[in-house]
Image 1 (cartoon, rainbow, N blue to C red):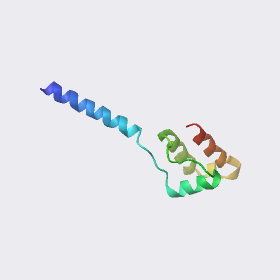
Image 2: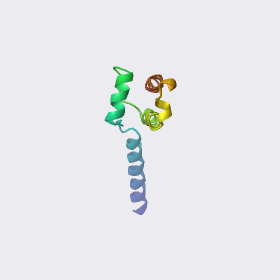
Image 3: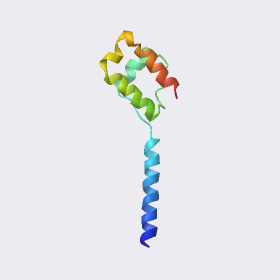
Image 4: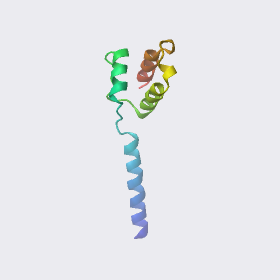
Length: 82
């Protein structure tokens, strides 16, 4: 009986983890607005968690956002990697 309960708990935990990895992610409204200004028509509704992490990392470093760093080009590369 204990084995059955343990197995059920492990399966439930594994399933929950899998769902959490594929859950949709949403960028802040400030980041979304800036991306839409740089890349008109960008589809941000179905970005992956990896893309989310890359975009947040991009916006978290001010040096990445200077014109010489081509932030619009970086965003385009991240979004096209979908």
